[in-house]
Length: 302
Image 1 (cartoon, rainbow, N blue to C red):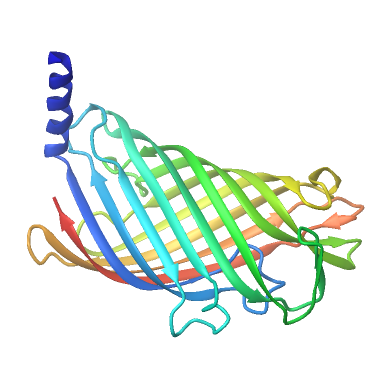
Image 2 (cartoon, one colour):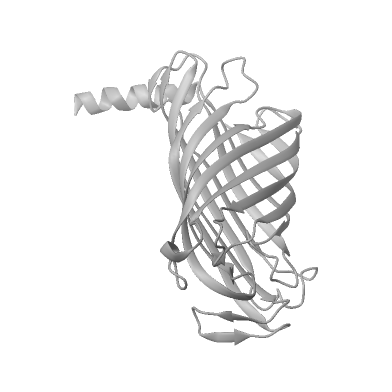
């Protein structure tokens, strides 16, 4: 019991000298699934609510568990400015967690995990077969589509160094999404697929008050692990690469020592390239997606 008390005192002593921001906000988000060239509208405009906790280890803190975990939760649903079809059944949800586990000198090592889910009711812009449901989809037909992503990984926090970024991470992603597959360059159909990637990300987060720019850049290499038809082994090549760039601007004003309202805007662009062989029996077109969001809120420093 005595040793547990000592550990607890040390643990909370570390937190007493670290800084934390807890905030909530409201805004709008423009988002869509990764491959959307077969949809009449590639994205949805949704009303968004978010809450987050941003933790910064104390400058002098060393050792294990030097701060509380950082978390971000977001949910988005249709509103009056959304497409009429979106108001029937469209939503987006995300949650991620980053916990600094160990600090040695100026570097902090931690673990991260998260999940994202997107549901959209969309109209397709061409006739095609959806093999998962064994349905023939016709142009203009409304359908419900889902995309999910879970990830976990490790990161190195470099905020106390003089580098241009403050975090570098490597993550393992698991995706579930429908993919449009072309057969011999003519027939096209939808196939529910599962994908896995290894992702390397470099990012700079907004830390502190004032007008702050932030960004993130990542590259990933992955493989289609399964699909309803054709099987992943019969694709021209199940391998792909994708890259993403995020740019943002945040203004956080210090009303008092503890209350800091903020305005935030950011945009993200992604590009997916699927490999092809010479035979091109079953191929997947490269695709790109752009999303952006704006929010206002209030944060509390403790």
